[in-house]
Amino acid sequence: MAGAVIELRADTQPIQDLLLNLSQIRLGDLVTNNPDHHERFRLLSPPEKLEEWTKERHADSVTLLHGDGSLILSLLLGKERSNGEGQYIRHAGSDKVYLIPERLSVDSAVDDWLKKDLLALESAKIAGIKLQNGEERSFAVNRNSAEAEWKSTVENLNTPDAERIKKILDRLALLSFAKLYKKDQEPQQLEGSAIEEETLLVSLFDGRIYTLNLQNNIAANGNYILSMRMGILQDESGSANAEDSNLRGEMDLFNQKVNGRFFEISSWEGNELLLRDQ
Image: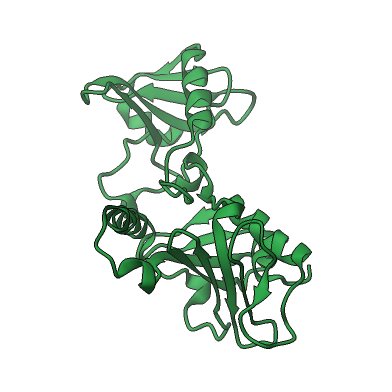
């Protein structure tokens, strides 16, 4: 997609690290082959329902599959050794519990396996920026070309200078997220919140317009909760030509991936987008 990137792809680096660690596992002593002892080593097989899983009893599961879905490896990871180095593991389907010399660390949070790149808009393609909020910092600027100067579209005293506009452009060129919330589930910290939402509208020369809605997180880290969508400016979408059809296709694809999703972005990234003094 020209101008924007949001595919929620897996980050290859943690996957490579995990595969390397798995290839270097050296099985130590056989601790037990009695299934009655699995709970003692936190090696009970994970239940089918996630809500029934308990950290004190159930193992973490790591399964590797071939492209056709056939099994390569399935390991259950138990608790760490209490009086020294090592961790207890067993193969899924086997009762034998082994002690490996070093802990095999596997992140279970979805965020740890995703590429964090959220948006990448080329500065030269951005034609207009508009900030809407209930404060006196609202503004709207646009330009006729990438080489032209930014001009205010309304008479106000809040028009940012070129340096501050560049700060927004730089952030839009590389915006990342720290946490992805479940689809169609509003983050708990926003439920019933009286925090006012601020909206940043970013229009491109080719007719795209991106809407970024930000709310300041009430958590101590001051991060922002972000939701987004893409649209097409009315004067660009009125014609039924091939280029317009491509824009509509990209819009549909983008919105399918972001609609109903909330992203947590760092406080400094949110502050740069909203031109808040840090």
